Length: 431
Image (cartoon, rainbow, N blue to C red; front, side, top):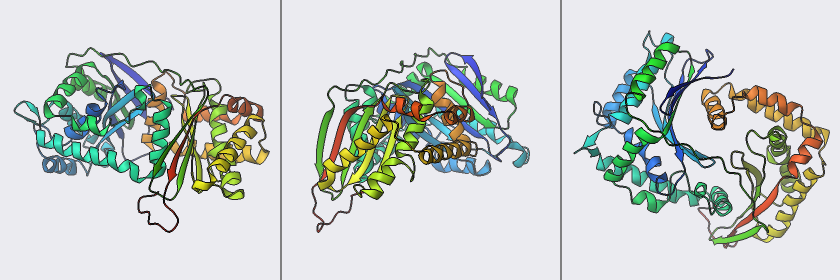
């Protein structure tokens, strides 16, 4: 199962993946651009404002009624980043035509997305000020709430420290200050630049009329003058020498320890299958080394998991610990990494890890959005390999291959969020 990619010109591509497994199709319209400090917040806010109304359907009530008439469809805004690239746009799962009494819901949803982008609701020629301010506040509240989940907050802070000289250190939504500075005027100007200079990827997974869908995409997105900017090259992460230590304190009970590693192995690297298996053996499941040895046997952490970013070449081992156990927990985690480097991996560990990966890969075929995510991220560097083909390569990885992958890991940053509350003090925000 490999998607067909149709380059329509002017930085617009249509990606089609025929699949008759589901009663719904999966449709996405996504803009891509370099992650930059001066544009990240506006880009992130834009789809949320656009989906509030169009010229024809100026309110959320009118839009909701339209979607209800399309068999209860939904259009959601999304924003994210892959390495040094930011992406944002719309996603929907319209009912297939044969289950919608002959109505081509996919075509109607695509047309509605086109309305949101090219015919948004305006007030005095600008995007709605009230919609802009309302969505700004929602996004600011979301940014502020990140600190409520201390584990996630520590993970973000570790990555920020690792990439501190890089625009990719920014949150995909930008900072609170950058969001607050947005106005209807600046957001309208950003929309004009997005429509003319940002690369556009359109995806459809399911059952569709190829020719009709291609022509519709052409008529919606290529009838406007476009001069797309190039996407940034995927720059490899270079670990610091020596590694850095960063400690912050917050009034919580539990400490959060994050060990950030760099590796030259990224998506598309020949050793990527071995690295994927390494992550599973080290931290991917209840049979992984960190879970069995550091959490269960030594009782040094409440959780310990690995969060990889293969497009960037980053791995963060994140754990929740007692503050007094910081040194012991760090040493124990590093011992498990060292054991992988020496190839101290049992047959049972390898078998369990491979089985877990195979299960997760096959589960991707049960979720169209997971397939889009897979091909979308890999497509940024020109890869078309299917999830099952990638699994076939993982299945052949040996212990020696895994040890070689482990030896590429280099510790860059040790971030510790130190809790300052005692066991008797209340802590309503620790997570």
